[in-house]
Image 1 (cartoon, rainbow, N blue to C red):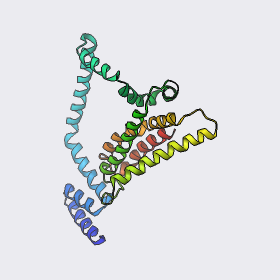
Image 2: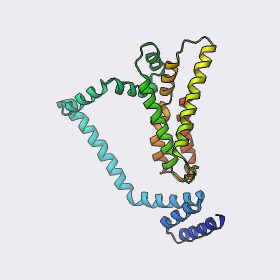
Image 3: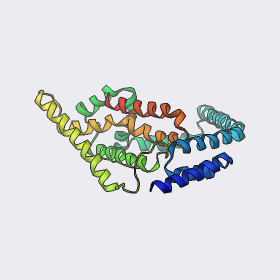
Image 4: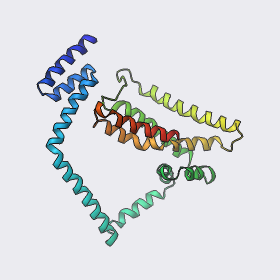
Length: 239
């Protein structure tokens, strides 16, 4: 209730003034105070970066040098030929190849749709898997998005209801697209529309895990970054 929230906010402010930012963070979360939570998290992040920035830079540089060295060794002596052979075999599996076409959407979207419609390079099974990945990611967003940006009431959140809503929206979108195409004497079959629509979700599917992770590193001061990444993925999908 409101008195409970006020009490926890008061405790959080007292902890914050005492520089006990971890405790303040917990109490602000219990109170549902996103502004206070953001301020406490900013201080925690600032202290962490001050203490660990050099280590983080060394790790990043070391990983970059290691990856470059591995690529050089592989080009010169084919050290990782077994890995390339394995990945080539995996990619030759029809279903895997169809799912990897998601990434082709970023470079050649028109060619991808042409492959789906004219050359039948994808399948209903691949589309169903893609839709399922999309639904799972949307549900994970509700659970794991950072507290600052998460407006989901998890106490009343129902996974099965959310799944039905998401699948229902996709189904209605596919049917409406198919009907519009039919009314305008289009050439699209329901199967083609169903499969093509799944690949149109590529930006959201690919970016969503990174959006969830990035949300845990930002405060309300950087909300424009979070909204921009979200907006780009949604606009790219609609485009």
